[in-house]
Image (cartoon, rainbow, N blue to C red; front, side, top):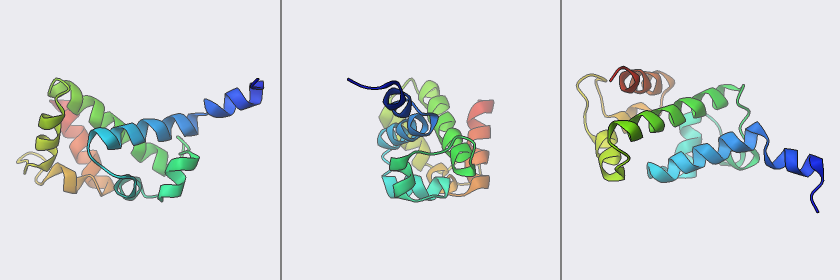
Length: 116
């Protein structure tokens, strides 16, 4: 039988954010090393949990927001999501999948998608 503290640990914001980010990675064909690089941390942190209040947590939230907005824009079709990410974009002035590895690039891509 689980104690209350064990249940709280399973539902901690850190672990929820990590799980959401890992799910985004699966959807966008990004492995754990790539996810860690995008949010400026290491793979170990992805497994232990990402503090939502940290800079890595903020970047993870942005990447989740990118996924959510792109998913809605293409009707959830993974093939179209991957194509959009891998295609040169006139408005973001680059290829989104390459841009999101920097803080400025991630912000630029998210801002563009939010404005669509």
